[in-house]
Image (cartoon, rainbow, N blue to C red):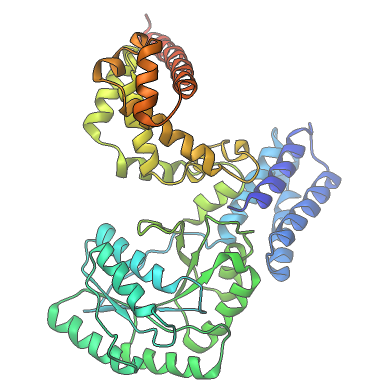
Length: 443
């Protein structure tokens, strides 16, 4: 995600760090690089111009030129301005009314239907509310069947509208059903087109009048760049949208849509779609996204993901074993399993400060993801005693494990080498912690 932009901005800040003090020449050179980086990321020209002007004005101020660490100050200014460009504060959706209606709009192929199911699951899991899904895309073949299937997978009630062809009749029926059965949130999936047309907009305006939605969210594919921003502006002019959902942010997105849409439309990015899974919808945090773009990581999101998948009792046991340097292959298997639940490895690494820049070009490959799964299979094929005492693994045991896991002896040896390196690292970290504790206690 946003790899080219991350790389270019990373080079700019690295160049500045190499200077003992900054002059106007250094800052002008950096601004040119930032301008090029943003234009190559398909950010709207007027947005780039305004952004660079704001950064330059602050960078030429006394706080930078007289600073002991001017390069760090410039990086901080770029970070601060990126946060503002992306919306400043995180937007919290309000679900007032019974039901609170969320109307999803956008062009065909932007991911509205999948987003509807993801959002319903997010509302149920995060907000403890009871949502109802409404498939009202009558123009796309199988759209309603798709949402019925996704609703079943997410265990979210879905109105069966396959016998209805009028979106306005669907809206009235959905409101009646939500009111009678006490659903708190109604998520309405509307039709899209390949291009904006008056017929579609007229229909959406009539639906808005019937539904009286609390939220009208424009769903845009971030891979389309400035096309997404132009579409958002057109929808906003007719419907007065309240927010934006960007899908496919885990793909090969250049970043133009994310960095342009808020300033051009004047409405916040509310959610980001990351992956095909129903759990792949995240609340959009401008500060965290700015950190990722600058390669500073996103520790807050990483901690949130870890808290969702890590068992507290297992974590306490692991901490105790680490302190005693008793980390074994069973513990490694648990960690691999938790890592897998947190999402694709590339996304997890991007959240770690400094790790985003260490990712291989093109991101983490499927082969590397597959290798972790094969390591897990190797460990699963060992006996409990072998997992606790890896030193028992001789040639015959390794051949048996390789046969049982569908791997090879070479892969098992690679696993054991990496496990040994982890043990050494943890031992060093444990000693460092012990020394620090002794210093604090004055021992």
